[in-house]
Length: 223
Length: 223
DNA sequence: ACCTGAACACCGTTCAAGT
DNA sequence: ACCTGAACACCGTTCAAGT
Image (cartoon, rainbow over all chains, first blue to last red):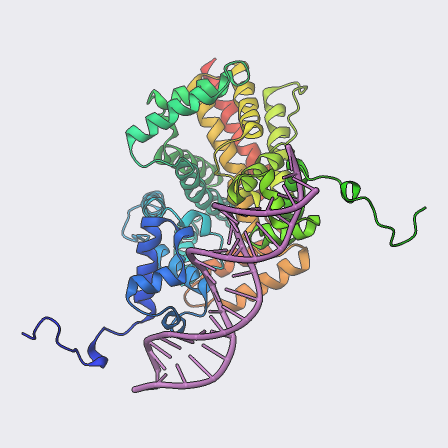
């Protein structure tokens, strides 16, 4: 055991940097503090390196964010062992939705040039439908309806800046108080409806099943 | 007519700044160059004022962007003269979609704390359904399905960084070339399908009508 | 009331120099 | 091959001073 302040040989002082370490640290940082708080300088400090060290593994900040998006997208669980096309899509999309909630910065960055993980995810959805004999136009329509639902719903949920149930209630009442009764009676009713907890029909899975119902109906009508 | 370089009295040299002028200039700038190119300094230069003049009318950049979002949202046409709830919603949502395409930065900033114009827009949608005897849960579901479709579809369309048809084709072929045939056969097929122009089922209005169909069906089943 | 330049504390990134 | 500090050209915003 070396004494406390032994001089560690320069080369062994710290494990060397690499792309994956940088990307993971960036994701962890953005998960905790938000993507807009992520700077190259703070990230480097966090890793114990000078800023410019990052640029040996990453072209620029944009390249870093692209890599973050693809790494997070890779967390989507693609289970190919399900019995039906419906179950395959359901589990895959629910997993995608959970990834979006885990990485709250992801939905807004979703519309970047697709990396391999996103291609893999999209391929899986399309393959599932085409191999279940969806005609091409229906597969295309289903693809867009389903993928849009995931990111659209995530955006709509995350748009409210709270994390737990009490915060939601507090913010909801605040919103209610801010809304003029004369000008926005139906909006007030809507907020009140959400606060009352009767809106099970409006959660992610319920509306996902509605889309799947529609696809199933169209598919059986065709055969 | 004063000579070319007559000294204009200081007080009349330029029409004074105000919030609306700043917000409009910011919107025009963001429409042209993208929101990420908008800086307080460039905006002020554009208006012919010093940077700090802006802060007499705007709390900070965030306040400015909030104002931009609400001003753009105010461009949504809310027509209350339609004959049916269906036609009212249809025209309103198509108008909202067009606004999103006109201000390409808007969808990503949509999830900000709602201003009066957004409240007005949301109120109109909810009022239309409730006054057509939609029960509260169905109105809530329809509200979220419809509003999500507008911003979700806009995001998905704008995610492709081209503006005209030729660019689309060029970028599509590029995307095709980049996709490994072995790894992504179905994704290649999908891109090819879009390029072939057979995807009329996947435009904004077609899918909007699908949602409206679903709501109409549920409404008539209930009565 | 409205405008302003200087100054501050930050950015991302280039470059030339280190090992 | 990987790391680095100094420097550059930008940010948003505070402040104190002008009219």
